[in-house]
Structures are given as C-alpha cells and as structure tokens.
Length: 242
Image (cartoon, rainbow, N blue to C red; front, side, top):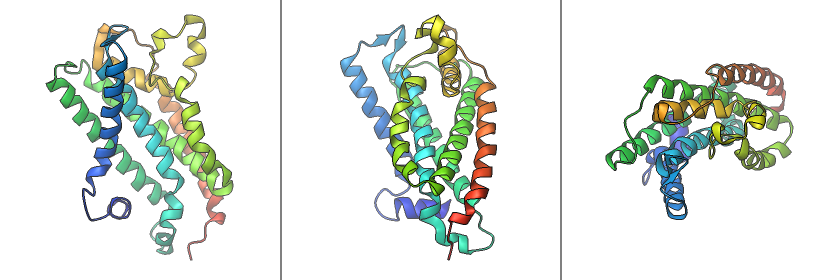
C-alpha cells in the first residue's frame, strides 16, 4: 500500500492528499453544477446530499474498476519476490480506494452538515452496510474485468465505455421509487442500486421511499470475487514477472 501511494501520487506536492482530494473535487464540482441548473429540491430531496450519496458511490465503484486494470502491469516487477502474490497487488489498491472514498465521503458529509444542507444520519449501521456491500460488489466486478483484460487487451479500452453505459442502471442519479413499478423489478436486478438505496435510507431515513435487499449486492459481490479469483489463477500464464 505504501508503495502504491508513492508510485501513484509521488513524494512532492500534495502527494497522498490526492487520494482524498480527487473524489472531493469531482463531487463538489458536480454538486455545484446541479445546484446551478436544478431546483434546490428534487422529489423532496436536497440536491447536494442526493448528489453526495450517489456520486460518491459512483466514484468508489469506478475507481475500484479503473485502477484494477493496470494493477499488474504497473507492479509486475514486484512479483519477482516470492512472497508477493497477484492478489496482494489487488488488495492494496482496493484498500486504498476504499479508504480514500470513505474519507472523502466523511469530509463531504461534514461540510454539508455544517452548511445546514443535510441532517445527521438516521441509521449509521445501514450506511455502513450499504457502503460495504457496494465496495464488495465493486471489488468483484474489478477483479473479473481486470483478469479478463489480462487475456483480452481490447477489454481495457472498453471498460471506460462500459462505466458510462451502466450509469442509467446504477442508481447514482435516480431513486428506485422513481422508476415505474412495472419496470422496477428489472431495474433492481442490477445489484448496485440496492447498495446505494441502503446508503440513502441510512442518510435520509423515513423521509424517502427506498427499495433494497440488504443481501443481494453482498451475494453478487461474493459470486464475482470467487469468479474473479478463478480467472486470475488462469491468467497467471499471461504474466511475465522477469
């Protein structure tokens, strides 16, 4: 993890701050744009806290996937050491992204609370659980895609496009309650909205209508991680650590 921090952010300038600063800049930027072009409240929800719960979730998921794609190529020399395994490279990046996104979420929440834009959380446990489920699902998706990218180079180019394509089904900018009831089951088949709905339910409480299964994203995260480990084991032959 320390090596990742140094190689990615360097020793000069703000350095490690960018692990937290990058999500902060993106989130506050989107909040500013939405607050300018939209009404202060959407469906009874404040724009700023709504963007916070959705966009911070998107940033963590997107960073988990995107930074996994180069985890092996950027650190392949470290695999020369017998005690360093491929899984260690992934775990280091996942831990850093989780820490950075979580700290950034805490900072954004504190700023909005001090500004009177959001109340104290109604259910911290639900926020923690939703955030953890999102992290686990993101790790699984990242592991599968990065393992496949080791065998199929073109996938590394397609992943950014896939990230944009999933936005309408991610729950980042809409609530499940806003989806017409006849389409809601199809929409909720994707695990990510469940996790984000839990985070929002923990933040806003009974003031909003939420729909989620607390174990659905956990299940799919476990399935993807298991599948990703199998793919990584198979992809080892494509890695040259010399």
